[in-house]
Image (cartoon, rainbow, N blue to C red; front, side, top):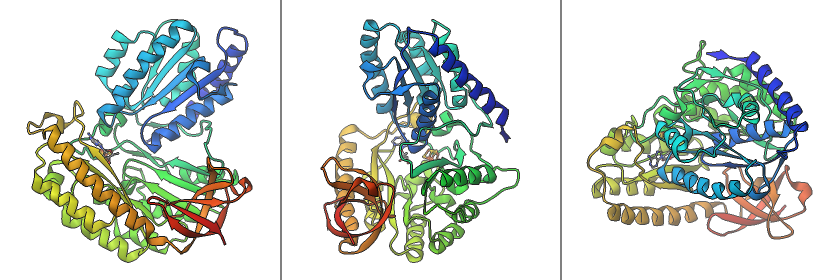
Length: 465
Ligand code: 5AD
Ligand code: SF4
């Protein structure tokens, strides 16, 4: 794996060049608006692009009408994400008519699909710059090219084994952030487009990750979220293989870091070693996101998930035994091709037995190019809607019961922001439960003991003790 530091220097040069160029031009005001779609890894990439624009001297706005540069980091995991972008481009066309100097930039997962690029070329010629997931590190260079060009620039790479470290980032919070530990996915779950748009799994070197976290801790970050499509297989492809559990042990040693989270765990790769590290750790939060996708062993096989209903339930049992107060969350897909009522009842059964704090429920979305899209027995829409409603109702009822289990206890809360209601702060427990507490904004970024007084479904009201 090539970890490319010269590339970083080259891109930092382009940031300077853009800044000089913009300083000398009066046709584009350096004001941007950036919109993020999709997962936490996208959010992190969005923060990098924002950090680069900030270094170029840009100011940020949340209003498209005020911006001279608008950027979209796109997602394509489900079809509605794509429809949203196309719908929005229609709206932007109107704004650009009145403001022809406005620049429109699209990047991220959706741009890795050939049919999307064809559509942009054909129907959206007013989009100025398009790049993908594999060459996002080239953003400064491509942005510079865009400032010097009147024609549409599209640069998409099919694959890359490069990891470029050390580009700037505009973090949303000063005290918590995500850290990429790996990119891509090798699992090829039969419904999922991610391996096609994000490429093969590649892990960052542990030293690079640890150095970054040490630096973040030095800047006042106390909570980190280690990010990857399948963190449990971290390190397998490195020259000197390392396990995710071993990486966690090293992260634990870093002074200043108080909370460690990670996402996403694939059940097939969740090791006993990891469960033990979680149980022994003082810093790893008692929250595990463990997507089940389906409770039916037959469907799980067709989904290519490499575990069955019993193995999933056994994992849940082992985790609860090792970390009794664990908060478990999950992802579930309804209406995968060929799903019968019996399969669906297996999903309901696993949900009941697993007692999730939250589960994200998704209607199966056909993604062109995936094996599942070619399966013939797609489930009728009315059947899917009925199952989705039943599942959602169970998940919500269970979520309320599960979340309420901490009522009356004292928990450590990291305060994150002011609530819309004056005088109230909002924070999270290690279980990722949201708590609203009366307090002043000086507490933001700090940890305090809080008694959880009342549970309102998915959040608490509490008071400082
Ligand atoms: N349709 C519906 N949901 C999907 N997911 C991934 N691909 C699809 C699809 N084609 C869901 C999975 C995954 C989450 C991020 O998105 O549940 O865990
Ligand atoms: Fe998609 Fe499966 Fe990879 Fe998750 S593990 S990104 S669901 S292919």
